[in-house]
Amino acid sequence: MEEILLWPNGASGAKGDTKEDTPSIVPYIVNSGDAHGAVIICPGGGYVRRACHEGEPVALWLNSIGISAFVLNYRVAPSYRYPYPFMDMQRSF
Image 1: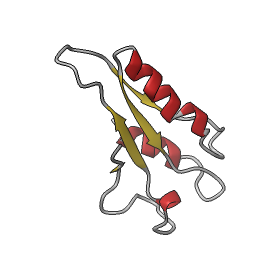
Image 2: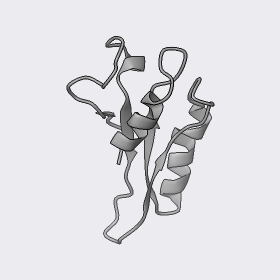
Image 3: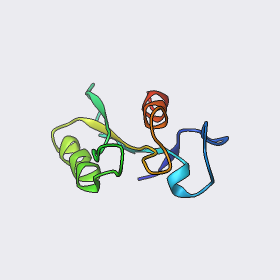
């Protein structure tokens, strides 16, 4: 799946330009002609890390039941604390 940068011109408050400094979203789109729902998945980890097993596997399962999904790769501690993860979530809408 193709990753889409949330902040193409640099994330607000970014401390560098590594992958951890550039929040993104990965689409998992259901390709059907029917109308269907979509969700944004924020893999858990208490804002300290992102739990990978809560990202792509959940998106693929949602696809299997006809729901499109978007996995958010938001910024986490120790480099980023509130409000940055929240800002990344807001930007993903």
